[in-house]
Amino acid sequence: MSEKKKSEVRKPESPEDFLKPEVRSQNSEEKNTSAPDSYRDDIPNSELQELQTATSKLQTETMEVHHHPQLEHKSKPWKEYLLEGFMIFVAVTMGFFAESLREYINDHSKEREYIIALKAELKGDTVAYNKSMADIFVLRPLIDSLFENATYPARYGYKLEGKWNSVINDKSILYAPALAIIQQLKSSGNLRLVDKKDVGIKIVQYETFIEGEYKRIYANTNESISKLYAFEDELCDYTEFNRSINKALLSKDGSNQMGVTFFYDMPLKVRDAVKLNQLANSAVNYNGWNVAYIHVLKKAKAQAVDLLQAIEKEYNLGDE
Image 1: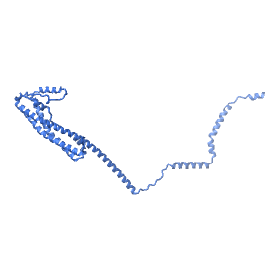
Image 2: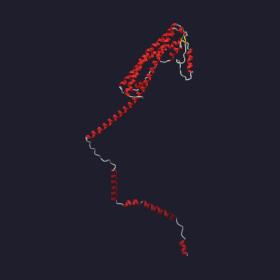
Image 3: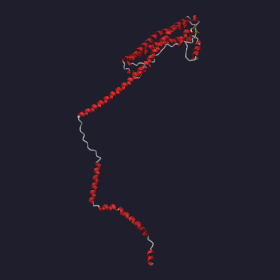
Image 4: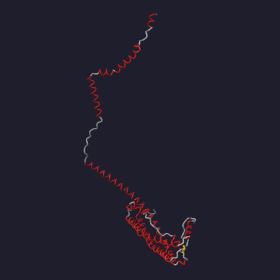
């Protein structure tokens, strides 16, 4: 009994006993970490040198894999150089011809567009020329009557009769061709696109005539009309003229029908013989320039028709 108690009763453990497990674990870790060094120490120096040599050879072989091989360049036969040069020449030539063909097709399309527009403009010109000539023929006897009216004003009660003077004031005989398409061809440098020589020559001739002789006669005729109107402004009373203007403006359709429906007399406020003579002479002057103007109208129409015929012959536009 006493022995069992002795064995069961133990002295309290000392602080060193508490620390012993930790010391043992630290000692074991130190032994593990020092294992490689002890392993390296166990390897003989000769084997270490062999291992290092093998490692350096492996690195050298690995690096040599990235080196580019030395290629040997052999000179080509002269036939291959000739063939390559020929192929380059063919490629450049074909590109040049393709570009030339594209430009030709594009220019041909533009040319046709210009010619179609020019044809329409010329047709409009010929219609206007015909109307101007017709109006001049209508005015000719009326201007003669105005001349007699101004020369012998007492016979007509010192007034300009509306049955001829209203029509003279209402009708506009002048027509100025715009030449819009021809001017566009010239200003853009596209007159060169007109491939047909005969058409190109006639275009230049028509434009030259209009810009020269036609516009000169046009300007003189317009000046003669302005002088006639100026004398009427100076000598006549416009009361009835003003009433007719308002009547025309208030008409149902809003169109100006003066000279056709509405006639108006113009009383002469000035009865000076010299002034009346100037009025009569201005009527004759107007009639005289109409003769010159109708001459250039005929020439302009003839050139326009000639150019239209050339266009139709060369381009076969039909109804375009």
